[in-house]
Length: 182
Image 1 (cartoon, rainbow, N blue to C red):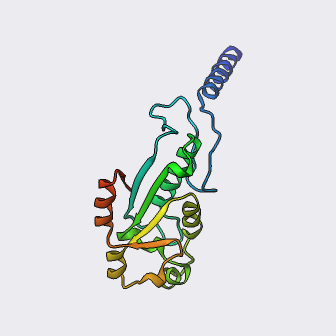
Image 2: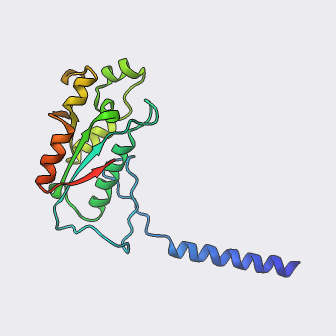
Image 3: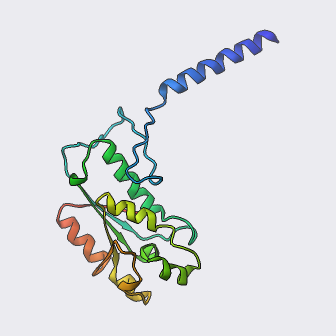
């Protein structure tokens, strides 16, 4: 019985050693503090070219699971920003546009308007401010605002209105932006 325990202990120790050796460098690179957790994996395939301009339009259409939860699409945009910054892409090379529409429209609301609609503070405002500071342009679909009977006075300060998410996506793709639907 003692031999079995010793063997099991050696197997577990070996597994722990190899698991630690296979663990990537986990230096988190957070430009957007507390959001978009990013782990640096220097040996992974498809590393971003730090000399290349990064253009993407993120189409966010899904509401958070609850009004008190941060928009998961915004979290993923933060992760993309963090990963690219960790790969050496500068703020000047980062051309990111976020388009909030459909269920994600309310994420763009200033706190008073959000409280009226949902009864809680808008949990996305800090993240929106951090993304804006990182150079991400933030827009809400004008058609979605109209259908929800909202106007520009109800928006967070860093949010602009686009004619529509649909026309913005068409225009931005023609300008070389990759579409990332979230």
